[in-house]
Image (cartoon, rainbow, N blue to C red):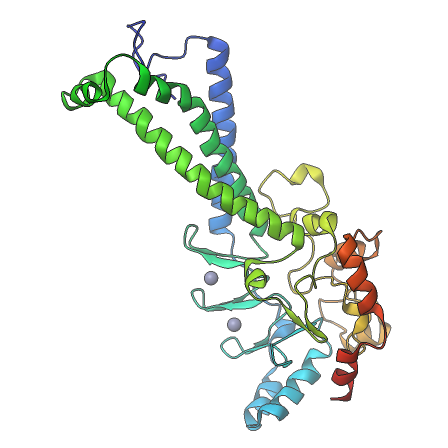
Amino acid sequence: MAEHVDSHNENHPTQSIEDTGEKVVYLLVYHVVFIMFVWAYWQTIFTKPMNPLKEFHLSHSDKELLEREDRGESQQEILRRIAKDLPIYTRTNSGAIRFCDRCQLLKPDRCHHCSVCDKCILKMDHHCPWVNNCVGFANYKFFMLFLLYSLLYCLFITATDLQYFIKFWTAGGRAHFRLKEYLNGLPDTQAKFHILFLFFSASMFSVSLASLFIYHCWLVCKNRSTLEAVRSPVFRHGTDKNGFSLGFSKNFRQVFGDEVKYWPIPVFSSLGDGCSFPTCLVNLDPEQPSSPTGSNPANKSAAEGRQFPSKPLRESQSRLLTSTPSWSENETATDKDRKGASNPGMTIENEA
Ligand SMILES: [Zn+2]
Ligand SMILES: [Zn+2]
């Protein structure tokens, strides 16, 4: 980083790196991290957010039917009928089917309408002004890698710059002499200013990126989006902030995929289709297909020709659900409670 600085003076505070090995390591690490950072950033910006499949859109006849009804309850009745064939498990706070007026569709689980993009975005996390794009199912992995590599990039610069930064303040003379030299426009002092600026900007970005990255790591572990962390998803039996959590390992693989070799590189490897997500609460819901994998034959015939039940991604989802569960201790307790067929919340829901 400070290689361009002249090294004619032994006592110079910003002399160049002399050790060739060190130079090589610096340049190599720098460029690897830089390329990964740019790649992940590019992918986050230019990956189009995914929108709900056409199965979630209202058909022409359903639209007409819905328009004819003016009462909220009868409209809900129609929406409920349509939702029966779809893998939708979440509701609004009042228990109604989640419907987007703007897009005229039934919102899949974890999908939200973005007012900036003016579209429903699958597993919407947030609309990010830094990447001028919606962060959601399609690019959440890229966003995580972008945070990781930009953090590594800033930390690397801070670390390699540190010794020159210290020299700047300690090497001979008081601070105001340095300023004088700088104002006189001496070539070496310009470089010192660069060192100073580089150190402050890199270290400050490191702090903010680290806090954002740690927060998103926590979200991945818990299988929550930023929106869900703010407001917990509402299922048929009630609000459950851990409704989509399948345990750390499965939560992580849902975002980063099954193959370890794809984890660090910004290529799409997330599991699922973004329209439906395995939830430990599925079996509680008598009105919905017993499994989100669409293995229910009645449901299969009803949804013939649909993309849903036969999509390969369902395999990954069923794998996520069927392999040995790895709930955390407290989740096991609540899960047992949930499994009870006499869930009072559900009884009410069935009677309604
Ligand atoms: Zn919408
Ligand atoms: Zn957006």
